[in-house]
Length: 479
Ligand code: PLP
Image (cartoon, rainbow, N blue to C red; front, side, top):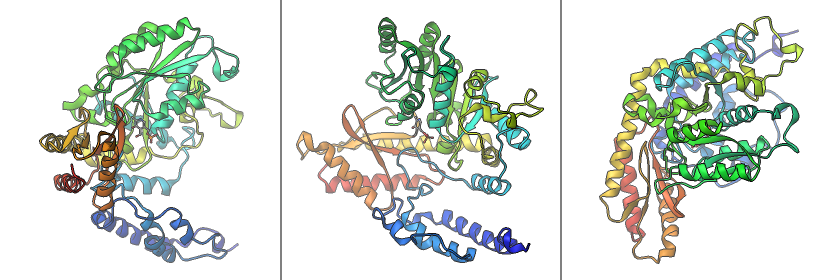
């Protein structure tokens, strides 16, 4: 059998890989040339692509040449320094190298045996990260793809810990009606976990928040008591450290007290906010999290690790394992009592070697380098907040504990009912310039604009430019 049935010729690979690395480096160096938000109309990329795959081989060079015409018009540039929407996620150079290496090695770390380095590096770098975040010793960390998956796994463990339920074996049909709690400001992934775990959306009780968008702890206590009286079984509370809309921080320590008293699992969603604790001067954001049963933090958000990589820490790995471990004969190994098999701590069996990119990032920047970048992003956000505060045409909509500023224009020339519309227009117009991308939310019923600083390449001049554009557009719209 000839070589033509194997892989593409490695010399061709070598040549195109070199060209591609050059291309990516140029892209990162000049990403500001592109409009940050893609301007493509819906369906255009599909229309431009052939309806079926080629029957005969095409050279790699030709395929890669098509990236410019087929892919790039439809890319929204998360690596652009003007990306201030949602929570930024940026790919650092060491993170990209980690991805290349992971693809090249292509190991499946489902079992320790199927690639010992994948399991042992994962356990090691997650322990490094735990120390860097000031989290307590003894936490077990495992990588998941996203925070949604981390939270699903954590809440599945919480469900497993309900005495006498044995949901993994018996299912939930006809069994106790479970209840879990999170604030009205908590991320939708918690409710999604409820859907998947058979708790249902009705089983995810939303607790009111105070005027600073933090969970109202007294309301939590009352809700639990009401639910018990009505025959429900409360089992978990999710506290947020950096809610998605306003980045508020729930009173974790007080919530932990309630969880301890009531025998509930405490899950901490620090998907965005947790990264702030890399800076020792911001460590207090995780106050109380030492009492959480599980905690999620996303290096793919504000730690410059390319998508996707989320970390789930838990004090009770044996419960997570009890919720997920299944050992058919073909997955048994001689080492299973000596070392963990990470397939036992999540939904998927196959596991990418994601730890490599985190290892590269932690080493290439070092703890001090990462902390300095986080600190600078917080400084830039605080500066932006100061500019907004000093301009009477705008109002601040929430506290800024991290690097996300919530604000909106005051359009005095417009009727009160048209304020939302005018702010939407303001956002669409500044995004239409192609220089920046900001996003919106709703706080206290009012459309709110969010500017989140978190991109690795964002500098002060980008934040100043964002403010200039926002001021110009607001003036044009009659703020
Ligand atoms: N939790 C919070 C607080 C978030 O802001 C987000 C996403 O922005 C998530 C969870 C979900 O993250 P992922 O996209 O990793 O599932």
